[in-house]
Length: 257
Image (tube, rainbow, N blue to C red; front, side):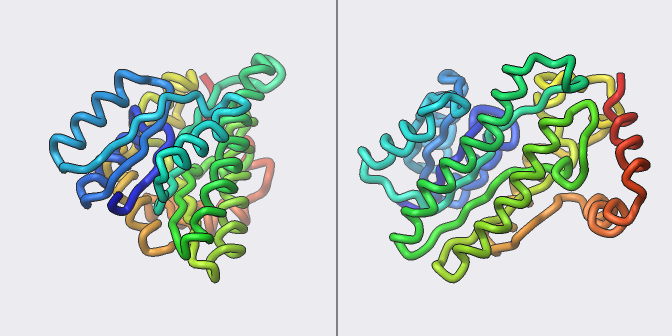
């Protein structure tokens, strides 16, 4: 297999664009998500257009044993993953105590537990194979608390922190870990998270541009990358020094309906 990438949440949005961009460079793929039809359509597209090999694994990575099953599949095929892109995740609008608790736990299971499990399993393999690259898709949400999406913002703060620590632990072993922290992206995220009609989802970048930005940053071994320069400046040099109550109020209003 040539430069094999494993991409989660690959059926739509940024994940699908990661797959397309990697395939355009001649790389083979393992693509996984819940939607079998979309994955198979993408497999045919990439194999026909780029003459690469694409494995499809239909899985709900929020389930208890899904990461282990995915890892066992890869091992059973004797595949060596060179690139891991942890892209799968979702959000959910509303005041925490008014949201269904099982939905909040499901968000943690996918956004955090699955990402940790796959990083643990495949980073171990990368170290044994003398190198590899990991890209964890975080969010600008990880730079601040998020009233009206409290759990989602917290999961992305975890991804931000976790990814940087993993990079520090593994860089001298040949494995880099990059966290991509985009602002709003024009995907189905807003609809799934019930954020339509809020100021948070006005405008936004295309999934193609975000995927390219994150992939290129990963290949360069960058630690944290934000796809919009002005947003990056605000998050690094304005938000950390602004009064906490002001930040909380602004974020809450941006996500209000």
